[in-house]
Length: 111
Image 1 (cartoon, rainbow, N blue to C red):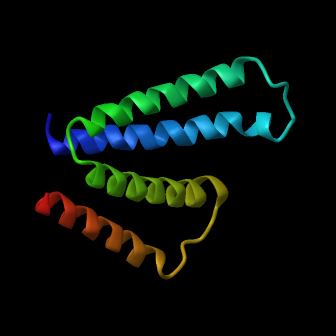
Image 2 (cartoon, rainbow, N blue to C red):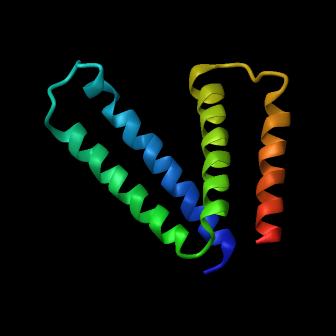
């Protein structure tokens, strides 16, 4: 499996964790009962994300996986904030994203 595919699997793992937390939100706010389909769906998303993470770890190093997970989390949360909540990007966000991408490129070329 190529490194690019492993990074794609890591992206799926990050999105799975974000989806799992989003599904659990009503339960943790105590607006729903502590059992039912939302708990089950959240657990399914989290198990799938964990399986994707393990699969990605088999093909790239832990350092590369951790770096890519933090980058993908940053990108996903900025995208969700802008698209779903109408947030405005800060001036330094593109610089932070470029730095994170640069560090991921450096780590993948060194290791």
